[in-house]
Amino acid sequence: MAEHPAYPVGLRLTGRRVVVLGGGQVAQRRLPALIAAGADVRLVSPDATPSVEAMADAGEITWERRPYAEGDLADAWYALIATSDSEANTAASAEAERHRVWCVRSDDADQATAWTPATGHSEGVTVAVLTTDARHRDPRHTAAIRDAVVEGLRDGTLVAPHRRTRTPGVALVGGGPGDPDLITVRGRRLLAEADVVIADRLGPRDLLAELPPHVEVIDAAKIPYGRFMAQEAINNALIEHAKQGKAVVRLKGGDPFVFGRGMEEAQALAEAGIPCTVVPGISSSISVPGAAGIPVTHRGVAHEFTVVSGHVAPDDERSLVDWPSLAKLTGTLVILMGVDKIGRIAETLVAHGRSPETPVALVQEGTTAAQRRVDATLATVAETVVAREVRPPAVIVVGEVVGVGPHGTA
Ligand SMILES: C[S@@+](CC[C@H](N)C(=O)[O-])C[C@H]1O[C@@H](n2cnc3c(N)ncnc32)[C@H](O)[C@@H]1O
Image 1 (tube, rainbow, N blue to C red):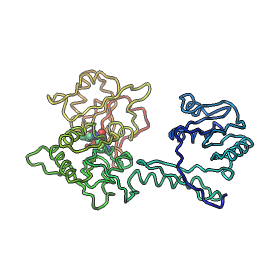
Image 2: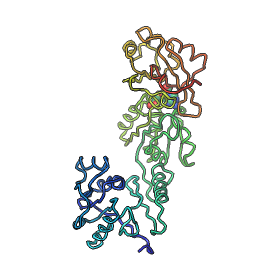
Image 3: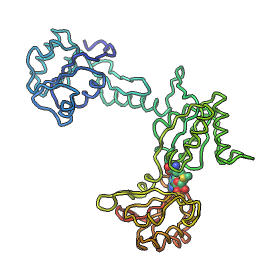
Image 4: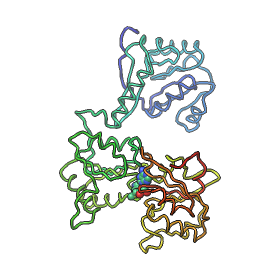
């Protein structure tokens, strides 16, 4: 049997009885895929791991708490034999053979009539990798091939040329705080499929350098806007390129809907009848403090965090932020776009009750090679920003969480 390669096939198990013998680690690893395939799984085992037990409790499988007994495989279409008793495994695989039930064996692949491939999924495709014959079984190698293929398909480095899926219209993609590894898998794939990318100054700019030469990369800040507002000119550029049938990605820093004007763009596209996909991103408001060793919440220290824009001063009539109320909160305050106005903001917080000794951290260009963290207090932050030449983009964190992690100032 081992001389010939295994014949790969996809089993359609919906509603069909699959018998699993043994409730240990092997069952724990294999059961989710059987459940996802809709199989009618019957587990026969005196005991089970807590995870397997939870699947039984949730009604995803039925569990008979006893050892294997002759006849268990009679009505099975497929069997997974994975008990710790090799005699029981041998008896069960003999029964499977008699009933012509395909079975995998965790303890002896040679004696099995089926092998489980290393599998992964990407965009409607299942990738399954099998060793050609039992003598050369190397599960790490097959898993590594599976990972390479699935990752490549997901992040767009492996593009199947005949079936290149393009998302019509515009994708508003949250690119994360700057580190190119911190974009989502979906965002990265859409970027790899784009004809046109309109990018902000913030976000993973390094990814733009990786795009193939035919992709048109447009710097949003440089779109001429003449009689329009800058944002209107960006909306128009998105609409015009999409109308030409191009796959357009609007690459934004952080998350599109956190001070990102993402909904304005989505609304403009909707009005123009252009399909729009929104891909969330990792917002700098949480990830940049984290990258500098600051958790925005911490047990016993802060049970809330509030994210605010500091782009207009507290006494500016355009401000929508209730700074006096924020001063009364005890949790963490995360201020975006606040470097220029931090002096007035700190003054207002102190004037309305926040202690001048409250720790403050400014994290500039977080998650990039240029990341730096500068620490201060509400009393000293205005002069510290000037003395240490802190520049945007920076996330400012106010609160006791600033002091909980191991840290140093830059
Ligand atoms: C227009 S807002 C966009 C926020 C973005 N949508 C998000 O979710 O992170 C820009 C502000 O985000 C913050 N910011 C974004 N990326 C940053 C980074 N890598 N380091 C520090 N601050 C950052 C700064 O406060 C900056 O002024």
